[in-house]
Image (cartoon, rainbow, N blue to C red):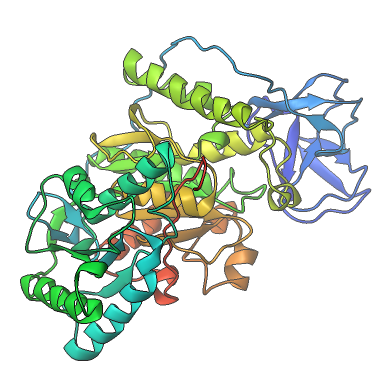
Length: 494
């Protein structure tokens, strides 16, 4: 197969391999001679398209033709422009879908916490209240590991390094504290040392107040300026946590306890054909099991937001979705930036033309399930099912926001490849086989096989892999020790 038409109403097809000028493709019995060379993942017109006529992909407009286009021409940024402009108004026109999956009573091996939450990892974390103590935290870990030797039952010891916590005002200050507080509560952490300097504006006193209830045997605090030897004091506290965790072990828990973030980055023309639809089917499957998925990257919903709004469970959820979309557009406007200039150079090289093109592919990660809640940046999950989360498209910031919301695992689709990981396991799912074969030390699962293999079989393989990962199998970002925390910044730094 040379090309694929994603919807019967589309006036374009997507090239499945590099095609040369004058090559003939067949679409529904019609032979079309190519007017241009077309790279894999890029679009080809299958009918003549008049100036200002919609370009249709996924059954929806992804922009309009800026000039007359004939069948066989390459469709891309040179002859297509976005239809999006300004802030839109929305009406609640609910259209819910039946979930195609049933509850199969599946389980994974996780760590039950005293507050009822479940972790898929048992790690010991140092959470700095301010970036000034990142180096101290690393020295503490090295000495702790040297003195303890075998750190089991902990599977890893990690510093959640960041460069904030001081010289911040307003929302930036609150965002930093909220993300760090949420990290302390994260079920993948079997124990946490909150490490401060002593003079930062993210004070330990206020941090504890926002933290609320916590397990005092598993969460400890240290202000470095208040002790003579902060390394010795910190290691002593880590050993106390370690002693409290000695009996931790995995046990069978329902798949309903799994909370999974949905993210994409370095997308290409196949992302909306293979990897993102695979995540969408998994999202629907997990919802049927009583589990939770979270879609974020608000700028990559622009142009496809009405599809999500129609699936809002209630009028209140619809209005929260509208506020999330419009608040992010206002953020662009307040900073004098164009709202709809989103596809990156890598996206465009991979075949994505407009923001609608990107968004219609991106939102497929959310499947067809009902949207049960919308979270602001820094909020934690409250309801099981499909949630939306306000965060930017930036890979590290959005993935960190998903982890801070309570996701134990992030599924990350990519067509171009990326090595990073958030501070929770971050599974890379490739949209095409060549990047999987080129970067096996980055990519964990190849969704490119969906171009040749039956979708249900690939989904079942994917589900079983996720269960193994939730039960302890490490991903590439963990093997490579690529673990990052990035916090959203919008304002002034003192």
